[in-house]
Image 1 (cartoon, chains in turn red, cyan):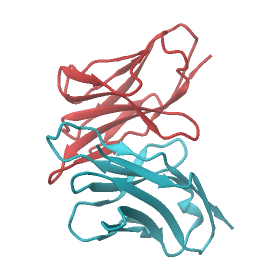
Image 2 (cartoon, rainbow over the protein chains, first blue to last red):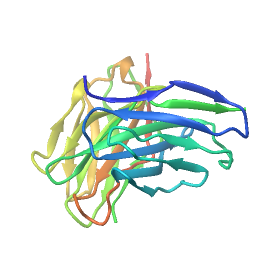
Image 3 (tube, rainbow over the protein chains, first blue to last red):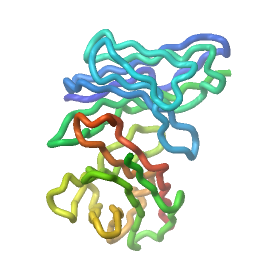
Image 4 (cartoon, chains in turn purple, cyan):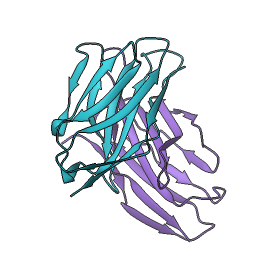
Length: 114
Length: 116
């Protein structure tokens, strides 16, 4: 089945450590996205990539880094510079429909930093 | 620029009652509109989408939405709420392909609670 996988589902880290969240898709989508979600809040865009080897900052990129070396993979690194890293992280990819973008989401990774 | 506004961060209805979740959009071009549902600790799942064909769009789980250009609205409805409908619902708008904007814009979400 085609889809987006994020691993692990739950991740625990100590403060000061970098951590990398995995996102893989087998939908053959060009564009991929990372969002952060905090309790009771909507989605905030961290980074997005429209094509391999290219990516752009979203609204809250500080303290995060990404790479896009392969079409199917878009890992997100949460660095120690991110002041409040504990959150639910969602990866998405999008397909180009008849004139619009349609986004599909992975199951998410809940990161807890203590 | 495009935007969506969801009215009401929390809506509570009784089981069997009508569900109405409100979404208004702002767009200088014909919009492409979506509703997503998110269950606790899960990703977002596409419920339905409006892509300029029929103004009344039917989706999964008995939900539907009507595009009203005169009211710039795309409200989500379900005639009879079920306990399993309890979730967070997001309205979203997509920019046209190859425009200067390439990001889908999401509303802030509405949490739907169902009372037994």
